Image (tube, rainbow, N blue to C red; front, side, top):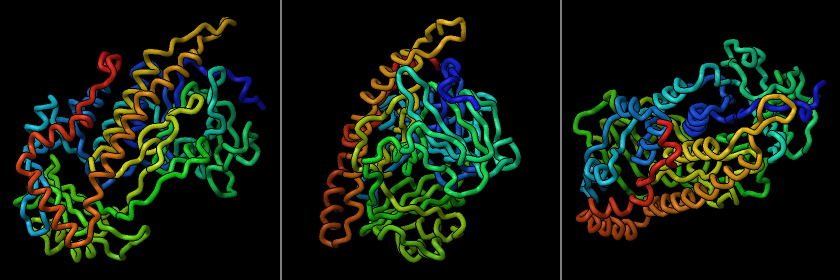
Length: 466
């Protein structure tokens, strides 16, 4: 057997753990800068998710840096009039999103999440995506040594590229391929938990890479391994439902606030409506028929909410409890592992910035490691290696740029969401009165309030790669 420490990685190899929006964007950005990328996704396929995503100007600029914003704009519906209403339909705040966008030189657009994921997948190099595999970081690496990632799957077909998954070329070096994960030694047992969680025979590989991008979501296994003392995500005591339904007449994009609950509706470019609702409920609360529960809770609210919910089927409703990383990570990198998106800074959805910040992460990371990490001669006549010291400096710069900004956005989002959870009639009345006062100057105030969030531009090096 070949020992992992005896195998040199090829120059500029990156493994991305997680094929969500942030992970895919990071892979696209790295590939555009000459990195060989492998994206690893535990799901056996990238199933369409019945939800939309609002891409604020900062996210659209990030997609511009990846060379895909033009297609996003062509498939997305611009947000025109926007605002906040009471359950009886009275407007509390109303503004023109187009005018707000003009202040920042870019409009907010709305796209179906599945179409955005598909666009990013198509922007990847051929064969870069592998599905149906669990990835475990067994060694985060250092300036002088590559990171090590163990892959396992209970589906041999998935590993070989059969119906269970997408088998592709591997950018990082394959150190070893086995059928039994139990035989694999680890340098540090802290990182060596069996990814499958079962005693099955598994298809198994160990990869070494110059860079690992941990984009494995709010319950990131990589974060738990490399930051074992971090408390992880905490509950907001709020549950959320998301759905996409056929269009209805009289729809104006708006968010409606009630007592401890919210409904938001936004049109998509294909004529359908993306909707979401939240309610203050204990974590784990579920309903046999979520569509019926939504109609019970919100069926008496202003039009067209009842009509939208009438067209809702239970199978089309996604429900999840809202959580966030209230305790920030001390840094966004460990060794050669960089964290992004929900794995690094999961936030509440109240500013609509979760996916947007993940895109910022991806573009910033790709720009920093693309411009500040030279290749150095191997010294033995072999292929050049990625400069470990340069990578260390680039990842430190990534933490320095991204951690303070995402922490501010996290706090703002939590603060904005707090009044939507109020259930006291007195508190809600005071809230609505103050919101109505704010609504009289909504346009200028909205620009000032959102400037620090959406008036972001990619690093200069990222822009040069459009």
